[in-house]
Image 1 (cartoon, rainbow, N blue to C red):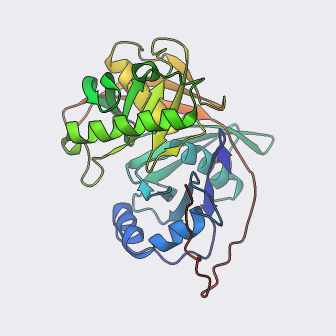
Image 2 (cartoon, helix red, strand yellow):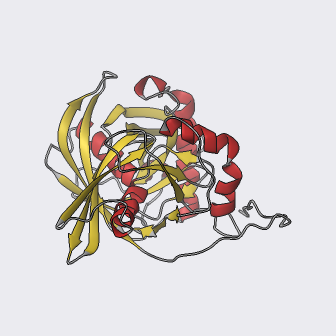
Length: 324
């Protein structure tokens, strides 16, 4: 499947049992014991540098209908908004939950926590999907950092199931619509590396999840109804979609800066022109002391292919490779 052009490979069968009492235990297990399957499924020759995927496992939260272990080019993410949108359609179409018209509701357990999902259904066909993620917040809404090669840069750090550094591309002398993607990637990576050394995110997050996932460069239109951005996450991976967890984080940051109020919706566009919507639905007081918001994100996912992958034991490249 793909959501806004961003691929999402769903493993349906053939994956070994994933051990662990909780979803975070299972995440640690696949990191330690089954990572060769991640690279086999996502890297060349079966995938590519920017491939994304998921393994479905049994949830440990009683309210969850299914649980997801999200995979990218260098590991396993805490949240994946474009993946949740795709999984919403997939779960309804595959009968993993009972189909209800006009809305089918389900809960997907992600490593960051439970995510409430709504799938539109008309005449039996699934359509648009929206989700409300875990509480979002902006622990560092207004940072000034010295980025090597670019000078002093303004940015914010916000959480939408994963932590992102968010900055106007113009701070780097770039235009998110017109600059070469390679230059945007270089700037986003430089920002990520700087922020990682500058701030400690562990006090603001559950154990093991307090790390910066990536950086989002925007067109600077933070108060406007439509804004374009590019997200560079994991190991320089470029999201083709507007990034669902990034939309959540951007709405939290905008709210913290007084640029959006409860009930206001914004539209986010990716570098390929795909869109997602974001709306702040409520303000929240969080257990960690941060002031947060609930954000609803909407988008569309589409089926693209169905495949069977073969791993021969004598294939020297059976576990994948990358050429960059």
